[in-house]
Image (tube, rainbow, N blue to C red; front, top):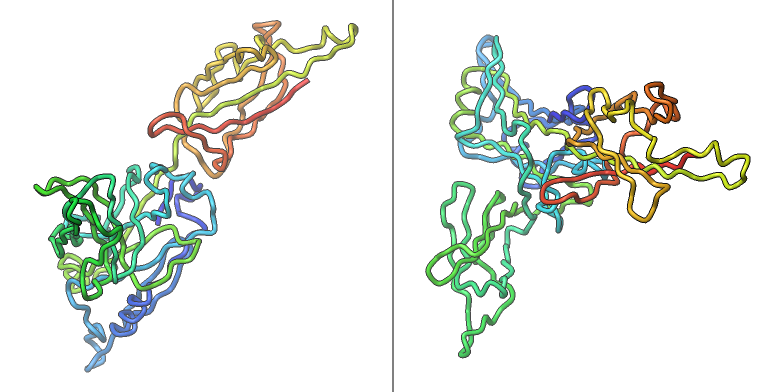
Amino acid sequence: MLHSYFDSGMAKDIGFKPTLQCASLLKDYRLNFKNTSNGFLLIAEQITNDGVNWVQAAPIDVGQSFNFFAFSSRSDLLNITDANLSNFSAGRKFFFGNNAATPTTATPPARLSFDIWNGATLTSGVSLGSTNFVAAVNKSLNPFWLVMLDANANIISKTFIARNSANEIIYDKVLLTEQPLPEDIYTLQQTDALGNVLSSESFFLTDSAADVSTIGIFQIRYNAAVDAAVTAGDEIHFTAKLAARKIKWVYRIEVDQYSLPTEIPNNYNPAMLCLNSVTNTVPVLGPFTPNILPGTPTVVSFESNSAIALKESPYIGVSLQDKTNAPALNTIINNLPNPSPQLLGDAGPGNYKAEVSLKIK
């Protein structure tokens, strides 16, 4: 797993573990699992009859899926990742998996990468559920049907929502199938009487319990493309690349005023403060817009005109200056701190910002 927030480009503080079903499959197919610094390895046992030609000890059936929980020790992983936070609320997790349309990158002599995610914004999450799936009915939508789709968008169940004589929905929850569903990704649709979709939600169904550090699911589907690469003897990689979140930076500077007559001339004027230059243009980061906050004449804020990508190593050289004697500038602080990802705030649909508050005198 890759992540542009980190200096190395490799995701940190992330680990993986197979679900219970996956662990059983790994044993059956004689695949050895091992975590690495930013991912995991699956190593297949091989056997030979003549000491020259080697084959996989237990060939994998085409269509088989291997599912892994991803977990992280970072509480702010979603904050530093380009993701729509509102779609990862209520315990939703990210889901990465390959399919027949997954693009590949070939690297000589024998390496093939399935590019599962290319750094785009994570726009939707999945909820976790049991393979004995019980669907919650959204009565506010007044649905007539609960429709369950598999990973290929095939309908696997369509259940009428029972009503009483007053045409009111009777049950809050409905068991969709008598038998447990296979561990996999599914979509639950609630539709009206004509089949129009009123709501749609993705679920990953499993019998394994996820712990509090679980952030997502990584699925490897052994399809025809993967099988062909294995048959060709390729080293296969499945890659998900996450992008760093871009946010507006806000510096809130409060000027503490001297009150003694002999010290008053030493007071800073908030209107004369600037970042780096009289135009408030910071190298690499771009321009900031100053604003004296209404009702607080001793406070000035500087907000970046553009969203700035978060990164592991801080941006250096954001300086607070006094331009009273411009063009000469008086440096007050050489390196202002970068905003903390943990202080992320909403700045409108799909936009976020973080504030750094300082007091000077």
